[in-house]
Length: 319
Image (cartoon, rainbow, N blue to C red; front, side, top):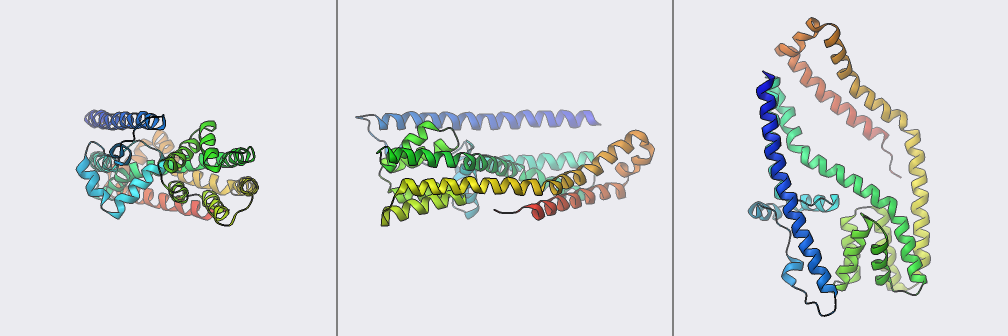
């Protein structure tokens, strides 16, 4: 019985992997062409092609991209993709979600044969690409937040050396590594192409929704309107960010017990089910073969997920 299921999963995985690979390769080639074009524009005598610079990214399914782009959900999905730093398109995410939802529904029905399992397998499969984007977004924002104080220090030192703020942004983009460098490079390129600096910084705050970045944008906007020592302001902001990191680490130490408890409670039923299946298979067989046992498995998974999310929300402390 498992052989057809494994063959089906393998074939579906190969098809889905080939589709995603084609999407990523296509977007990577388009990104490289755009970067080469921007480098030509930055050189003396280069002519900017507005259609290339301002054309929105479209995937292999442009009709779906346009239809999704007209909705508020599509705009949020596009913003999530940009914040995650992933080279893909909304249409690719939507198609992948539908395929994974169908695949998980078929796998759940073949393995469990309980109609109620669709209430879990379909949402999990459909939400998997979005959850992956959220995980990449959180990882990228965390890396940006850790590098941001160094970026502020570089900008402050460049200003003290006599460079303008715009030039300091470009120097910071050249010196640092992703994800800070690409975001500062976008701000530098946008104001070079004629976008006002305030709007370029506001776009940075929209792409990187961090409190520290909002403080940075607000401080620069106020300094340009009222004057003041921008280098000293950035030094103070960098010091505040580093102190907040210290407090966050202390909070993580104090909440470590709650996090470990959540993982233990999540893994304990699975571990016990596997151990009892090995020790006494006859005792555990009705749980997987009987309708009541399969319903109990589905209910257990739902309650485990709810409990884990509840524990995570209790121990999450904003600093």
